[in-house]
Length: 519
Image 1 (cartoon, rainbow, N blue to C red):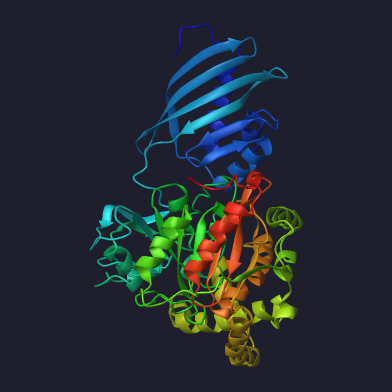
Image 2 (cartoon, rainbow, N blue to C red):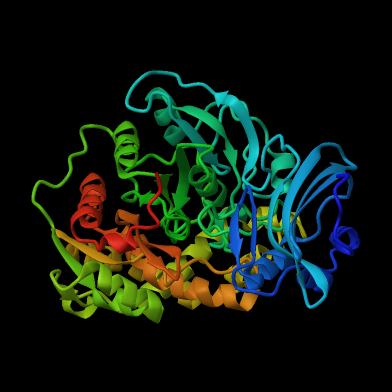
């Protein structure tokens, strides 16, 4: 304890704050912070500004591990202002450090700013299932030398079981004899596997929440969800603990977390990258995809994973704004997107292209995906009652209950829809927001998240139903949060699509909207 004069009541306020932390008394914790828009709290997951943002974060966090303060240093700065630095010892081991600026308001001491350094973690278990240094070394040398990969926990990694985001499934899995084709391609090109990253259960969700393992952090917005189902891979890349996130995209599971966290994310042309060794969700839509912090690495990953014999389209595509898909976004995102693209690009509608409305595409995808997910995992789920989280369990139950006639009709029309979309996008690239808006808040309830899922899949269904490549590029900032620019092109134009997005961001964007780009 400092031997300087400590302001009256300050240590009592500090003790009361620590007691509220130990009991997770949210009302008392709210009252312990200055109720002002410039109040700050930061930790390894990011900076929160404003009392409301701090309160929302705390409500979604749950309690903290039991600890006691072993040292407190106080430095009075003014009559009603003091700096407090304290060391905490955790009952389960390890120390933490808290730096707080306390201000006396209305006769009571409250925290105006705080920075928290938690105890050392072996690794963040909301992001990773297992990590190594490396977990698997590269098997060759090439364009990915020196890079590291976070592998979504649906891919086979030699020597490790597949967990699919579910502890019961993981317990019954066996170590894989060989890595999945998509993993092996990265290793052969010089990358090493940093670890196996968390996923939403069986990839049947888009939020990143996992009731079993917690929610990976959104490295761009600390109070927001990370996006799923490639959530762990995305968070690892955004936070710099891996260079490449290997994910899957069925209904947007690469594009959504890329949009929410300000990353580059590529859903490849359906069947372009082999899916051998990948646990399926809905094979008619499942694709290999990656997340990176820049376009150049994304192209190098593509080069390493796709045979050189697969050519890109030669002619430069016609780039047009997809009016229906822009209109499906929320008003703030629409406004920001229109400011970004300006007036130079042509505007088309799905009707003009001969493509059915978004709702028809979304409903076809929903029904076929549900039928294939039930076929892939229904027997296991039936044999393990209670093993799934409530949200994903309800989704599988709803999938199994879809009327058979509606499912059969959707399956029957899928191939025709796919061909219609592919013909319409021959020589064309459509541009629109990747998601309806920024990531939902950590505190969003199930009803809100289901509304967001419905709106999102209406926007992602075009590429999924068409089996088309789609990229989400970090181009927009809506209310200070990232929203991706999505480009969808013809089959096999994956490389050209990434380069077109890169040029659009470089040449066609207002530089004021580039704040979400990552280094």
